[in-house]
Image 1 (cartoon, one colour):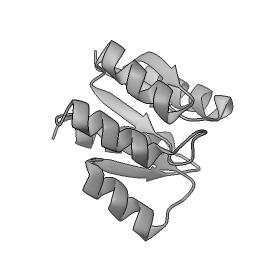
Image 2 (cartoon, one colour):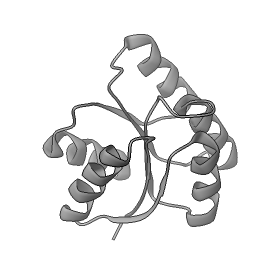
Image 3 (cartoon, one colour):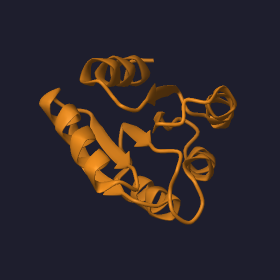
Length: 120
């Protein structure tokens, strides 16, 4: 079973993502609300995949992606955000994110992207 870390400042979004992932056979090993917490939990749990919101308290998801990739260049991160702006998508991908899903999230799109990234 593939292990996932969910990073989102919205508790509601984390609940929805957890439900979609667990119903599809993934194990959610941890959740984080901030970029700092995301990096700490990544180091602690070493998940197979991270779903990362862009807008987070303290800094942002892009900073967390950069720090996680510096720690583990093989990390698999999917950006999940309502901000579907091209510039932010490009920056996230340049920093090492492997995919991007725009909110509101459909279960089908999320799971397709998760499977694509995990199997790459």
